[in-house]
Length: 117
Image 1 (cartoon, one colour):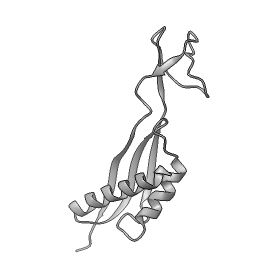
Image 2 (cartoon, rainbow, N blue to C red):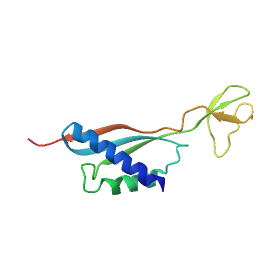
Image 3 (spheres, helix red, strand yellow):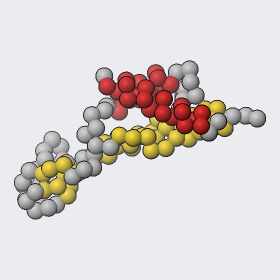
Image 4 (cartoon, rainbow, N blue to C red):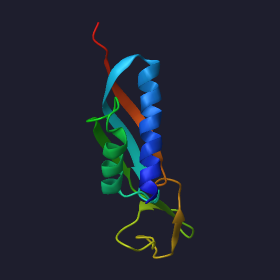
């Protein structure tokens, strides 16, 4: 389960960000997750919640924006989203190649709550 180590890294990263802004709590973590990045949404949710226990990210909402894989046809040049389990171009039927989108995995934003004075 590589989601466990990724979740721990995410929680460490946002905890450092919270400390840098003197925030008491992290209320929301927004991630961007590409279809080919190799992480399962449900596992990330579970492991982020587990890694956050006892720290400023405990109870934070986890928003995950899913990015579909984009393909480019080597024959006709069409860029398209993969349909089902095929890489075939919907225009000409040739096999498509990865066009770059869909491999993303990063923290997009973090919502912090200020410490009470």
